[in-house]
Structure formats: structure tokens, C-alpha cells
Length: 174
Image (tube, rainbow, N blue to C red):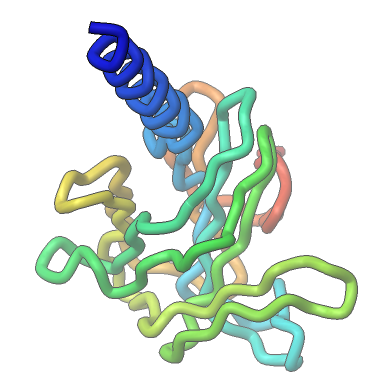
């Protein structure tokens, strides 16, 4: 009987640990907050290239382990880019993802992580989709883009073009 009770307690502890780990992966708290599909002079990657970009924001009070989260430019293939192990978006932080048509996750000399995804954004307009296990968590549809004008989420939850892009920071509208 003692072995059965010990086994049940052990199993309960393991299941509790698994549940607690799942709470730190609340992907629903990651939001698309800004994007630029016609980047000229606004932001360069570490190699000096002006790639399209997407900004993600962790709206939660916890760091989020992004491994397994998907990013895409449409619904047909939700897993065009899958975040690898070890990528964490800190609580309240913003992350810029470069849409450069090649895949790379690199740690830079200053310790920051630079991510490139294997697709570009169309300046004629399309979608940006975050998903996990075929469940769409956030989706933004945008129209034709102008050079160096971002499409950004406003405080009231609506989207608008922004003449003063703020990649990696809170959006500001004049």
C-alpha cells in the first residue's frame, strides 16, 4: 500500500511540474505589434541589410519560452518558421524578426539574438500569422505598404500606418 501511495504522490508531482511548465509557455500573450514590408532605411540587420521585419511583444508578466511557436506569411503553411529551443521573449519585451528569405538564429556579440525567417513580406499586402500546433494565435492582414512606413498596432487595438516606426519598442503615433 505504501508503494502505491508513493507512486501516486510521485505521479502527482510530475504532473504538477508539467502543468507549471505549460503556464510559462502562454503563447497567447505574444502579439504581433508592428511590421514593415518595404524597409528602405528604417532598420538594418547586423550585416547592414534592410530586410522586411515583424515585431512581436510579450504582453505577459512572465518570460515566454518560444520554442515550437510558428511564424508565417499566410495560412497555407503555418510553420514556415518554427522557433528553436532556447529562444525566450522576456516579460514586456519586444522582438524584431527579420523577413530575409533565409533562416538563421544568431547570438550577436552584445548577447542579443537576431532571427531571420525564410520568407519575405509582400509590399503589395498579405498576412502575418503566429500559430502553435495548427492553432492560429494572432493574425494581421495588411494592405499595400509604402517604403519606410510601418503598419502598427494602436493602444485601442486597431491597426494604422505609422510614419515613425519603432522597431523593438512601444508604438508611437503622432
